[in-house]
Image (spheres, one colour):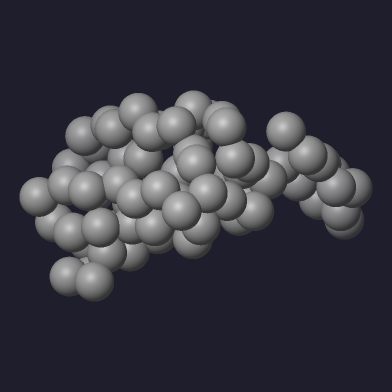
Length: 73
């Protein structure tokens, strides 16, 4: 886990090898282990792990069909 000091305090970035939760707009949770080149597949589309790696915790990710997921530790 890497952290960077910002004006709001510590910012934590999602890293390869971490297990995270992707939470959809209905509150469904999906446990995902981040791997470079990996993909998360679900009923509403695909999110590439490389899109998630390096993003801050709590970031929003969307599939091609515009389904929204939030990435949490």
